[in-house]
Image 1 (cartoon, helix red, strand yellow):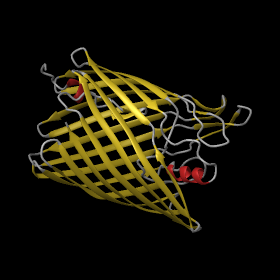
Image 2 (cartoon, helix red, strand yellow; image 1 turned 45 degrees about the vertical axis):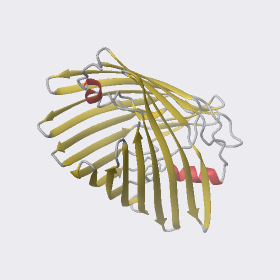
Image 3 (cartoon, one colour; image 1 turned 180 degrees about the vertical axis):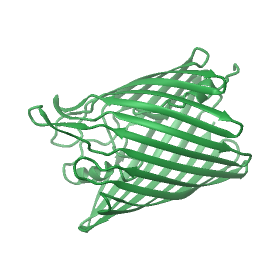
Image 4 (cartoon, helix red, strand yellow; image 1 turned 120 degrees about the vertical axis):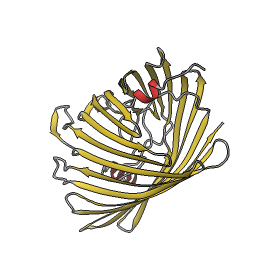
Length: 373
């Protein structure tokens, strides 16, 4: 294999995970075929003057990586999940598979160009009930709650991405353009075919390092077309501007990572039954995120990593106030022989929503096994 200088891997710091393929769209040279099986259990409690609601989710995602040939790779992902909502002394559950997502990445021009094609196969659970299932989905869409799965199934989708990368001195930079086409599907029983709007996303970024320190910055802008039900306009998601700054420090046995992110959301548009604009207001407020992780590896066989994060979400324009959550936890992992890695983690959350009217408490447990062949 020729001597790759890491241009694509390092400079494409802004290459995003495609919606139709959850794996990052980047080439990793020399990586063998591998699979990853994980368990993620999340639990949240919401309490206000009217009572308490408990929401829990067990998700078992499986991902895989297959090098097809030099500079060409295939990634895939799917999951099984079960979500339960306990409210008013009753429990409501929703279980099923998610969609199968495939992504093919091709590196060209001495690793300075990346082409990627993603496909979403509609294998997930759809045609949900209008009462119990919709209630569960309403909680999963609350952005102040942290869940790995927000939606079980969608329609057939396809997306394409092109990225370019370059190096200038010790600065590596790159950019991507991505367009995603979302197909129609029956989201709920007794409802017409729902067609989510297509998405266009452009991103730019750069990274550099000096001795043991690393710095990275990137910006991404997304716009969406209109959602429809049976060809009738119903909703248009506002554009997003995603700003990110990151830094890290690499020592012999310790690695420190710090990330800042600010997401700016524009107004959303709702349409009435005649297709006329009903209102144009923010459904979700702007969002600030801070995350830190300190990994200590006393040997090559295992590591332990305390971590913490903070999320601040501004109020929307429907009289729902601001929210915040603080997460504190730890991860640990160990390598067993050739090609087998196990990692587990726990994180506790506390916070509030709607300007303190809703008290939040949650925790998340993760465990995963990776095998390379």
